[in-house]
Each structure stands twice: as C-alpha cells, then as structure tokens.
Image (cartoon, rainbow, N blue to C red; front, side, top):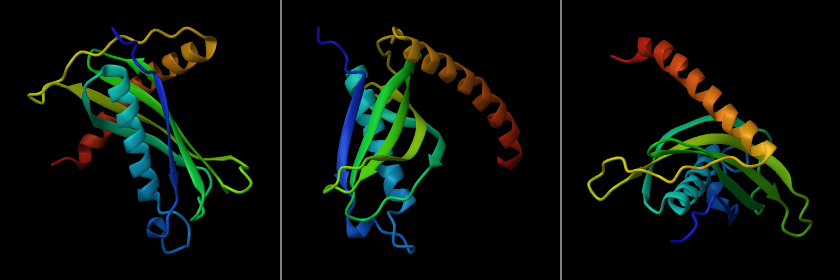
Length: 158
C-alpha cells in the first residue's frame, strides 16, 4: 500500500491575464490556485476524487505582482470520516531575486467522493509533532466556530 501524501507545493508564474484593475494579481486567480492545491493535496492523501466543501479564513496579506513566481503550499491538518482540512499558504517572489514573502493563507475543507458522488472514507491523519498537534487542535476549534457562523448566517438563506 502506498503511503498517503500529506502535503504538496504547486508553483505558478503570475501571468498578465491574472491582473486586476489595480495592476496586481486578481484575488480570484489566487483563490483558483488555492483550490487547485487543496484538490491535489486532498487527492494525494485520500487517493480519491475530492470536492471543495468550504474555503474560509482567506487572508490576503500582500499583493502579488504579475511576473512573480507563486508557490501554494498545502497540507492536511485534520481528517474526518470523508473530509480533510487543508491549511494553505501562498508565497510569492520575483523569480530573479527569490526574495519570498507570504501573500495569502487560508483553510479549505475537501471531501472525498466515490464514483457515484457519495462521500467516501479517507485515511485518518494523526498529528505527530507539536506543530501538527497545534494545527489539528485549531482545526477542531475552527469547526466549532463555523457551526456558530452557519447558524447566524441562516438569516440570509431563503
């Protein structure tokens, strides 16, 4: 049996079609890269096709310049029966200087599905290091917070 892959890094060059009206990379392009990395990470962990169930806590820390080399780092920080919480950070740099800086970070929850589109079991991830344990515990706290936010958001649902 192959050991599941817990983390992955995807790299992109920020292209002119990624630009917004302010001349920087559009937030939507960054969110697409995040979703791609979350999928690749979740699929590598679960060995299954995965769908995005939630993306939250997206924090845009710094703009990304067109022409930048962009890295999207993704890693599993919690697993449920069929879900995987993926922590992501986006790092950008000028490819000539390689002066890397954090630009964005967030959490994405992916769900593994079978060939019928039904949720499918995923391998359990067990935290080993102190950092792993902190991130795992934070994922659990965030689940509780999302429940409360979901209840409050019901006012906007028809």
